[in-house]
Length: 94
Image (tube, rainbow, N blue to C red; front, side):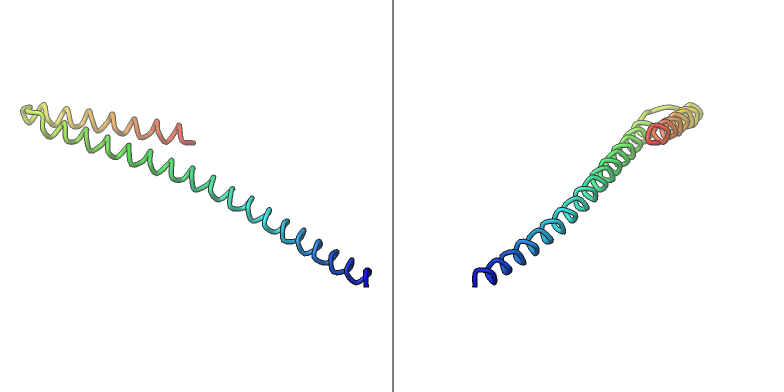
């Protein structure tokens, strides 16, 4: 009788430890996935800010009263700056 109860308890302990191990592994996987998704989200937020800045710069260029020759030159200059900034962001992201 006591022997049967001990066997049942050992079986329950074994099942509980097995479940604990399984949940611990699942927890580690979820933590890893959360870390990856957080990094991904951060990168997407940076990209959004970058595009917002591009839009702001374009709006500034479009709203500035300048003659057409100067406007084209300024637009080209700003586009070159934006491309350089893009290259720097890509470089820093690596």
